[in-house]
Image 1 (tube, rainbow, N blue to C red):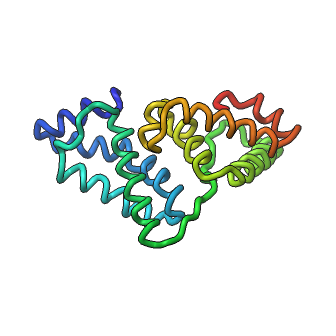
Image 2 (cartoon, rainbow, N blue to C red):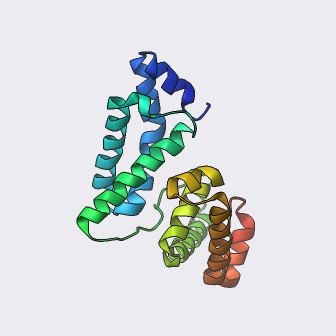
Amino acid sequence: MDNGASSYRRFLDGDEGAFDEIMEVYRIPLTFFINRYVCDMWTAEDIAIDVFCYVLTHPRRYNFKASLKTYLFMLGRSRAIDHIRRRKRIEFTSLSQAERADDSFDPENMYLRDEEMRALHSALNKLPEDMRAVVHLVYLEGLSYAEAGRVLKKTSKHIDNLLYRSKAMLRTYLGKEGQIFYENKRSF
């Protein structure tokens, strides 16, 4: 898929099913991203729905200069920050405890993976907010440095620097055990 652009063009041409496709692809990732800011899944879902309602009511505002995913995440981030400002409280959640699909049901391996994930989540929680957001956007959502920069209103170089510093801090927090974990994970 071309990051939703073809579905969005079909939506602009009057195909209502195309908007359903867009929501199906981006609703959950957008909700989880917003949840990183607002720390409340119900509120994150409401904000994500608000983003889709905005896109539905203002279809011509998207100009195809950035990917649709980047555009949706920019809108989501903006609305999440507005919500935080209204609430007068900034708090960031840990990474989700989503289960990873695996064919092996070996209890020992499952326990070790859970321990590795707990250590990683604990280390991620120690990072400053902007570093956590960059790690989430680049590694969990698969955005490019330029797209993550647009969402966070930073340059690609700044995103690169934040990721470099995030990895260094995570290695420090995780220590020797974390180094082994890092070597086994391609994404970090």
